Length: 78
Image 1 (cartoon, rainbow, N blue to C red):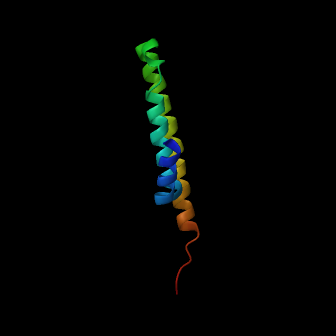
Image 2 (cartoon, rainbow, N blue to C red):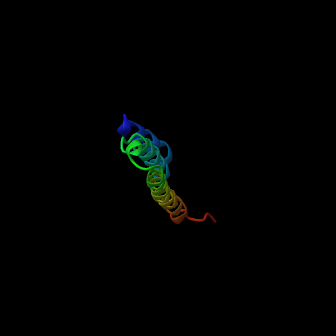
């Protein structure tokens, strides 16, 4: 199912869609981890925050790459 989601999102929205699809899948998998109930609340919060921030930064890089490729190869019409 995960590969199918990435395929559909990639076909519809290109690199930016793939970045958002990966963001969705990573958030979902990170929140399913069984380690969080075993951690102290402060450490669990810091770990979740780190995962969210890092995945968000990678997703922004993917969307930025999509914007760059979309605008880089546009030729002005005369």
